[in-house]
Length: 489
Ligand SMILES: Nc1nc2c(ncn2[C@@H]2O[C@H](COP(=O)(O)OP(=O)(O)OP(=O)(O)O)[C@@H](O)[C@H]2O)c(=O)[nH]1
Image (cartoon, rainbow, N blue to C red):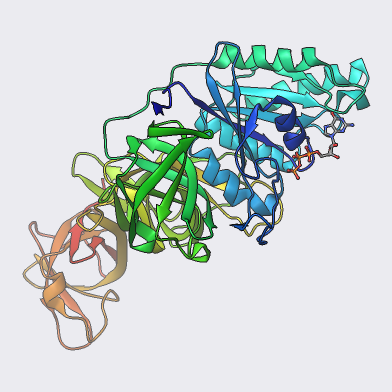
């Protein structure tokens, strides 16, 4: 038995519906995994006894001109299947984006390009397909527009654009050669973390009658070894890896970056199974909230407020989360709640259900409004930074207004009104700082009577400076467990 070499690159095959992704993958791939070219297989039992779950990502492989193993991930172009593309993008090292020469950049092309811009902006290759339907002038115009589009999306505008025609009669081998040469210009030696506890992004699961369950996926960290335990944290199940293959070769280990197919027993009820990250026992922790750094997607046209709900795609899952945008004060090591997203800012994401993610691993995520029918659905992206959110010091700013009712005879204090209710507990506000419009500052001493009026004591004499009916203000930082007054700078 051998080990799969660690030079494999994962290439997303992206593009709008019907642009020709599967046709290209068929032409270029040397070997496919189960149902590699069957992008929308249904959940049906087959005569071979294998029950396949709904497939929407097709995995196949080819060898690059320099001899590298390339894993091709044929992604669905339909907007309703974007979750699968979001999941797959986690492992992209490179992207081939197929664009119909006549249609140009269509909505799904744009979303896929945005994903590529996040995961591999300098490793995008555009295939301008269906060139049999266009004349030279159109091809030239289209290429120009595509380059402009790449630039607008933060992708290297000098990315290779390969003219292609995949239909019989127009297809020429030299077109594929051009594509292979373009891939070669973008090849690199990825830095894989092969030392830590292994993690694998599992994309397919099917039972083989009488044998067990076969799972396929891409190892994203560490090394998956034969006869070791793998934990399916979201199912609270652990299994032993009984057989292990990479591209139909029996192997005894698969390192980060490579494809793996393995059998576990006893079998699963695969209806319980969905795309997920699994790993060595203990590698993943259930997490209900995370702190992340946010990069807004400029093509997202709506504003997003704190407390609104958003789809968060991370670690092969898409989960609903409530977002709270924050501004970090590095000096005080605390965070202020913002009304809406600003750039740059941070976000506290509170998930509706626990997501299983590795600790201390900077995981990229994409937040989107997938229910939106038109326009760009991706709202912001970033990296998870910290899942230990319990002890974060988070506050919101509050302020109250009131008026001076009268200045007391001593000249140092005033009775004020309009800021508190009759039932207010003044213990909370005693000592809080009060600003007057004319300048002097005082402190709340306590209630005056039972109607919510209160006494403010000043350090300086205020008669002649502060007037009756003058507006006064109280500024506070509200933390989860306390209120603190402050004077704005
Ligand atoms: N004229 C022409 N038709 C093409 C070419 N490439 C693909 N097609 C046709 O376009 C249609 C869609 O091709 P697919 O490869 O299934 O497209 P896809 O991007 O994988 O589609 P989805 O997975 O549904 O997003 C098929 O009918 C192909 O025969 C081409 O170069 N020229």
